[in-house]
Image 1 (cartoon, rainbow, N blue to C red):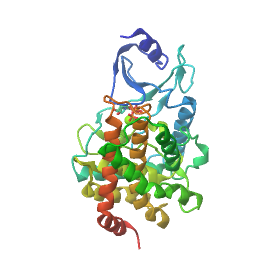
Image 2 (image 1 turned 90 degrees about the horizontal axis):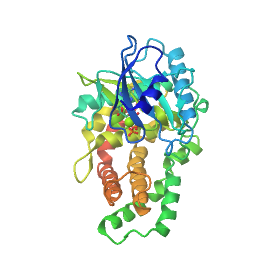
Image 3 (image 1 turned 90 degrees about the vertical axis):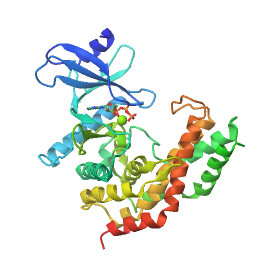
Image 4 (image 1 turned 30 degrees about the vertical axis):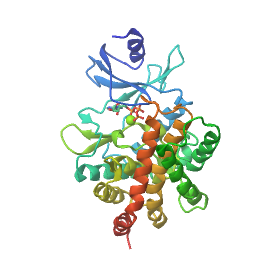
Length: 357
Ligand code: ATP
Ligand code: MG
């Protein structure tokens, strides 16, 4: 067992001995370990080193987590249908531990008998994802978003990403003549006028700030080990004040993309949306319905734009195993956007059927 890791894990152990510490899960941002102990209560827990390059203020993340747990406990006691990882405090009762290298570590309760999925197997599993995200938004709908820190300022602000893109484009040394780059340039030129659609709606008071997850992609939903039920939503580092449309559309973006070239899977969308909306009917407004389709188009554009910008500036943010990987990732997102446009009428019908008269 790595002695440095063992010393850190011990900070979170009230009783018992550590038996094993292993890398766990497939996360790309933080370093995640499963700690096994011989303690009778809570014999296993998750230990994570927070990525300091992504999160400048780790303590704010932990304060946000405490705020949402306190809210859920007081407002929804006995009616919570998801397990949401809880903080295990360090021995001095602090929410996280800073080691002598300056790294921040935290411990979370382990959601056992669970698994992540890389692809949704069927519409039943898709409905479960919609229910879970809707339930999560419902649980936090009464929490004033100003009580939360914005742990990643600028995250999901498409006009800002567009500004950076413009700056990078003027200085890039990447080949812009290839068919692949030309495709990306053309999609961005076509769509850029719409990049502020959600931010403008927020400014105009048409959409309101609420508490969002920030990263509800498929592998942040934990399914039961032995059934298609979603039992948990994890990866709560990006919880912040925001527009829930970013969450819904990012979830659809991640769950509905399939094939090569990438297309938008209507059947999965048709299953996710009723599940989601069944949970949020108490606060979802007519304007919220109206902005669903623009949000569904915006999120693949935003991510494609971020991948392409990163490609143009030499892959600084998104890790790559090949120099053109971010270019290919961008193309996949832009294909998804085009597929959404191609199916505008069918998607419109799905959303219209779900909108209360
Ligand atoms: P991402 O790449 O999704 O941003 P990340 O590095 O932020 O990931 P997490 O998503 O928090 O890390 O965790 C990585 C993986 O560890 C998850 O996909 C899941 O398999 C597992 N995991 C994390 N927290 C828990 C938990 N509390 N209980 C069970 N498994 C967990
Ligand atoms: Mg994750």
